[in-house]
Length: 318
Image (cartoon, rainbow, N blue to C red):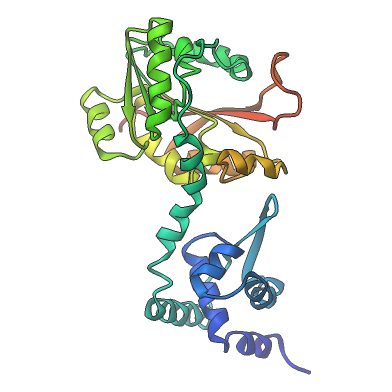
């Protein structure tokens, strides 16, 4: 009878499996992304990863029809440590390790194309997003600091009529020039004199410098933004860095769902588990003050994915 340890040695004797372990230790990757990195087909990657999944060295997570894999090589096992080191060496030699960042960045390409589509500028300015009005009461406890609010991923500015009366200054950030142009027309129609538009990402160094010069933001809002981000945890960390001590980060995003058609609207992820969202907020150094499922507004589509809200607060400096 073959011992479990002998099975492990046999599995780790395959260079392709070592590469899989190493790549998935660097980043949680879809089967398609691994196929691109390794120059293989998705069925081949699935076949080679299956034994590693069966013995617990790789964990699989579903996001709609996609499967993502991550390494679970933990502890002080010298054999597994050596396997990871060898896998990294192999991936460094074939260049796949260096390609991970570019592969991950490609997750946002569909989102960028979707939001870069120009929208007509002569449409009437609508009211604020009815689906998000339900969480307006959460702003009440945030009002002690009302100097500066940042609307990350402002899109066409649906939340700006809610934020503008409450804060002395509002910075609306978006990476799409087309959406910002539409947003600018709406700001003029709404008559919001204290809103400033800024093209860019939440992690832009220039944005961080400008906000730091103002002492940090009292409020950062990320409403239905994270599901467009290649690495949502990085976006949350960048948003947290914009806050002043005791400032608040408000996140509204989808609960997990299975509507693959949302990919056509540039969605990278089909929602998030609340526990995962909490982990990311805490990992950014914030205290989670609230986490709840938002009720559907009567005017919103009952077919749309359910929304969740999470509020984090930055601690005071020691």
